[in-house]
Image (cartoon, rainbow, N blue to C red; front, side, top):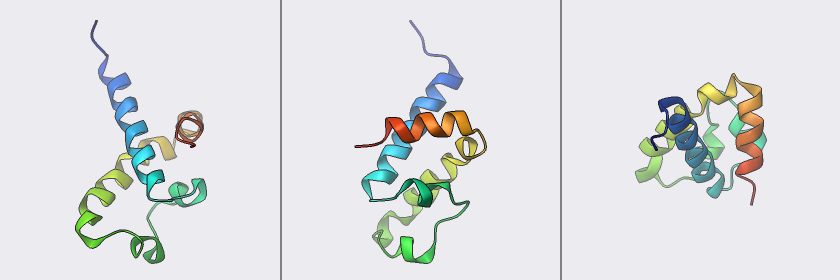
Length: 77
């Protein structure tokens, strides 16, 4: 059984959301188009590149509220 490309992309976005939430980001923080400077201060500088890549990866879900809601609920701990 193979996973379709859109489904694989959504699974990857869910992993990204979980990774960002592990940094202590709230739902409100994740909804912003760009991270605040105060938020970046919480992330070690050597992780900024991955952090920005992850942030950009969620942009598709920020514009698709049903997917955003599913991702938020699935990433709660």
